[in-house]
Image 1 (cartoon, rainbow, N blue to C red):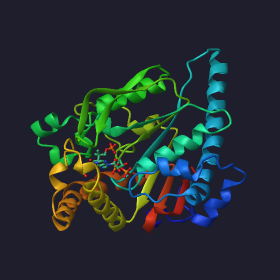
Image 2: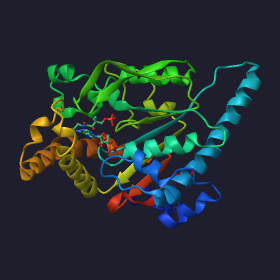
Image 3: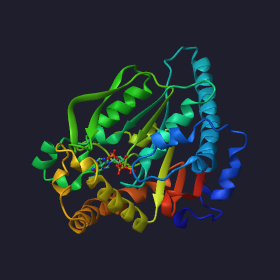
Length: 316
Ligand SMILES: Nc1ncnc2c1ncn2[C@@H]1O[C@H](COP(=O)(O)OP(=O)(O)O)[C@@H](O)[C@H]1O
Ligand SMILES: CC(C)(COP(=O)(O)O)[C@@H](O)C(=O)NCCC(=O)O
């Protein structure tokens, strides 16, 4: 895995798919083929075999890490002689547009919730923290959606800090892929989860809110992070194919921001998707997303068909 390669000085240990699969040990399979079909996104062919070979070892690793973190938390409380509020374990999931973050997040949410102690696992996506289209338009940022400057980073940091402080009923705004905008008044409530998964392009970025001289990074709140990786050309193909499939489904809804493309001939729609990829998503991948890969605790490298072919786990 190029920069994460198995050099002695690398902070990562790199596993082939087969080596990683053997680390499942005796972790039980708690999802059915029907569960996986329900949890996967459009065009993501993930199946039970992928869950067994890739996701169950992750679930086993996370069970050990969560247990160890809770032990540390208990030690601090006993040292201080205090009864602090329950603090959720926070997992960040990052990677390019169209790499499959949503499927991974939903599968992990379901698997972790099926641990014997049935933890409450909440999932929040960072798109809710995008600035509304009206603001993006006013600031000339409509072609920068997904770039660091298109988010209300201060609000995202407040959200993370409230969660980590153990507050109950913390809310996050909600984004609609249908209208391509933040939904006015809509919110998701996060109420004392045991585990929170935060998913988004930008979760590992070391940015500060505009004008702030000092501030934590979003990733400072993470106990564990996963970066989903694949060759640029593969992600490009997944993005364009998904756009063409959405044209036959979601874009047909008259409310869809992309409704105007539903009636375009396939070749024109393909050109539109290629244009969005080249103008927005590829530069964002190269300039802002890929450089954060080496900050992740775990990197899942996908090959064709979305199969994870290599896994890198941070040793240090
Ligand atoms: N224009 C769109 N209309 C409807 N759904 C969309 C659209 N674009 C993306 N999606 C869906 O939104 C989710 C997030 O997509 P994306 O941000 O590209 O991340 P990823 O593919 O890594 O999960 C996916 O489930 C995808 O199918
Ligand atoms: C909404 C997104 C920025 C993803 O946001 P995230 O949840 O990763 O923060 C992305 O899916 C998107 O719509 N990008 C804009 C360019 C495009 O239409 O492909």
